[in-house]
Amino acid sequence: MVVIVMILGVFVAILNETLLNVALTKIMNDIGILPSTAQWLSTGYLLVIGVLIPVTAFLIQRYTTRGLFLSAMGLFTVGTFIAAVAPGFATLLAGRVLQAAGTGLLFPLLTNVVFSIVPIEKRGSAMGTIGIVITFAPAIGPTLSGLIVEHYSWRVLFYSVLPIALFVIAFASAKLKNVTETSRPKIDLLSLVLSTIGFGGIVYGFSGASEGSAGWASAEVLGPLIVGAVSLVLFTWRQLVIPEPLLELKTFQYSIFRLSTVIMMIVMMAMFSAMMLLPIFLQNALGYSPLEAGLVMLPGGIVMGIMSPITGRLFDKFGAKWLAVIGLALIANTLWQFAFISLSTSYAAIMVLNTLLMLGISMLMMPVMTNALNELPPHLYPHGTAIIGTLQQVAGAVGTALLVTIMTNGSKKYLDSAAGSKDEATLQILSMMAGMKSAFLLAFGLVICAWLVSFFLKAAMAGKRMEGRMSAH
Image (cartoon, rainbow, N blue to C red; front, side, top):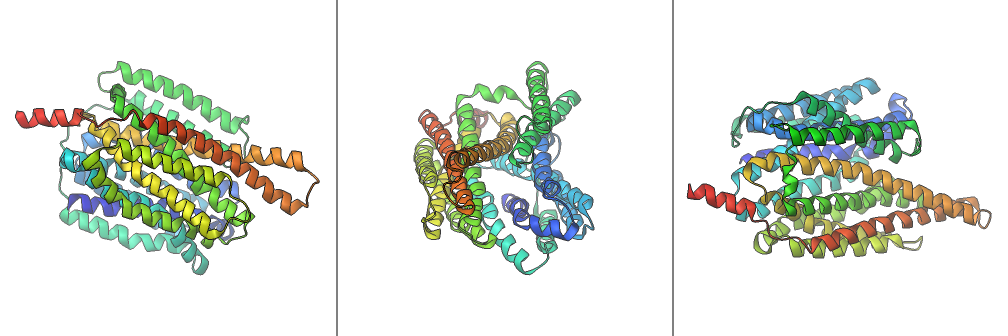
């Protein structure tokens, strides 16, 4: 019951993450803002989550499950209401920031609760159930958003989420119990400041580069990246020398945790490449509507939702290694196929390829994450969850910026070499395809590296040994 209550909250929060992307054009027209300003509704959201997740390890240890969950859902609900009634951009951004603050707390809290109350031999199934939520929600988000925005005001996106969020709060108030032990860790304020500047600077810098409004050499991108990188170096040093670190970096002493984190970061980059590049290709090159572009993603999301509990059970039975090896091989093959799609590639073929990509991702994301956390002793679960969550956010921002840059440079190179050979409209489409090919080939290369790493995965034993010791006592 505890997990069900929390899954509902996480579903609403993650669904909300992808609802707004399709609606940005309508919002710009309605409240009179430029694309560079509107982009902050997405960038600011990612920024808050990137900054907040490192602090979740401290919060989970310090406060009760019930108190944290209700606070997170409360922040999310208030933010949703403010965004729904926002008269202008500043109020809308404030609403999004509050939504992000709630979302950033919810998933690490849910993962930590599962690892605290579910025995190790059933964790794969439990995490598979959570996987339904975190894969299906973003998949239906763009389609749902496209349908609503085509017929109603963008404010309906927020109004439709509000009653579900209020129901989750009422349900949690009645049913949610405290399941994790609390302690009184001290928070190191210098670590908090360095973490905020470090992760915030990295996410902001790469997000600026991915928007295309500023080049890599601009102060707007380089400044935050340099400040963020220096802060992260100081943050890392600080965590290694103080007795109660904000993030316990000793988790990286565990080899399976290290390998699994690398694999998950690469998969996040691959997933972002498809989610970002495919809709651009479908709309700008093949002339499909935003709704049709969103619908391409839907079967993949449904497959991920169906497969998550199945791969969870397979993980409980066989471990993560071969699920990861097969899943990464499937992802690599699909990215290779994507690199060579052309104007003659049918809508159905692109849909099938995207579905196969999502099948591959569903085979390894939750099993690899579960295997990584299984290796840690229980007192490191909050830190392991926070580290994985933070690095996935950073990987998402870095991957998006990297792939946009590769695509832009590939397009420019093609235009320079083929200038004057065809009419302008055809040249633009062909240059976009050339850029996409470069980006997908880079993603393919990264996934091949992750595939080679996956052969070194083993079944995690540390958590099992720790549980054995605790039951013996």
